[in-house]
Image 1 (cartoon, rainbow, N blue to C red):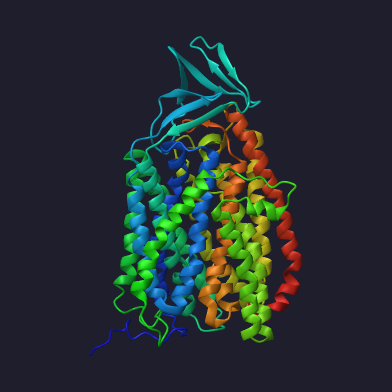
Image 2 (image 1 turned 60 degrees about the horizontal axis):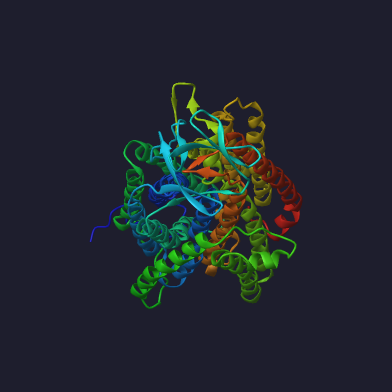
Length: 596
């Protein structure tokens, strides 16, 4: 039989330099991840706005559900990585996960009619009618909400002190509602709400199979000690952002011009493309991501179990939505954790158990050097949690800030939507990833490359600096209480540089510091740390919640002041934590025993 040049590939971990100095297989994995991220980030660009404007959930419910969803998206890789290591293999896991995610995006296309707004005042329900409102991501700025009280339509206006004024047609105050006495909500279809949660559940389970294992396959391309590994992961990471760049422009555009269903539908198409690249690889990935040798095929049972896990995720989302926000009080952190919804208990409990259990396994089965390397990895994973807690405000509080308190005009030529502002991050990653890759390679050749802990410390300080930059910009708002879009772009520029110092480096770090026999599990723990961060990010975003009626804020000054206070606090906290890590860089480097 004649074997093609691509199929007759070198063994995993070879010195192949066929694709710009890297193994040829990196190109296919790069493209696979690009299309998967096209689907995920296209959906993410719409999700928060979809929840607040179509389903009319409050900011608190929206940010809590968004944080819970993104948390589960990063929790399920812990299980998916273990299943791939023990039974399924990375390649089959990636293909199955891609199909489930595509189905999830398709289900999100079915949102039904817009929820009908209403308000509760002193326990009495009133109908709310809208004027100039459209069911799409982009607000027109001319929307008005009226409360119907008998024959009267009273314009709803929020005040800076938290009270609500109901204005008559002549502009006089017909009624004032005390702070906390006005509760806005919406009447939504239980069926379409269920479909929303079902779609998110399918994406959650599918991502668990896809996310850790595509990264593990990239790690297999490089032999131990290959200095191209960091550069390879940085290139791979650029593929992630290349996909998200286009989807974060196109999916919101379709949602605005055609409908929400079109935006989510495009995300589903991208996911199908991702699946096809692995399914029809022409043998180019033979030898990579294969099931472990000598293990009985349990793929059918695994696939059935994954389908059965979907209702479990759906139940967790329903429980999360039913829970009230928890405030940390004098009772302490233990009481706080115990008062969390089931998802919060699951995340914190899993993380608290996973770290000592895995370190105990490393102590028992590895030597002294291997154990110390695992300790260094775990310390960095904890700091990684802090970074993503703040960075992942992008899809929640920063998106809502863009919609409410940002002038989205581009030089007065045209305007972008709030969902499209997330593309700034992807654009800067695509533009800067090659520069950072060249920088790390050049510094490594001179023996000057910063250690991994130093890169992490820079990232943490940088994510804080990005928020402080935006807070500075709020000093220059006009009477409309909106900052120029370039201040938001500046935040994303700083955050993107910070991201390139931690995320691709972190993925590479896991494959270098982990015991070889549990590298997939450790990749899962890496994503578990991001999962905890996503959940906490939702809690932080809930602190920045603003009163809305029918998806619109009732007072833009109150909105601006709320966001400014929260962003300032988390900005300074991140800078301080980043400095602490820089001080710990030297002892951590010793524990890493020369790993760069």
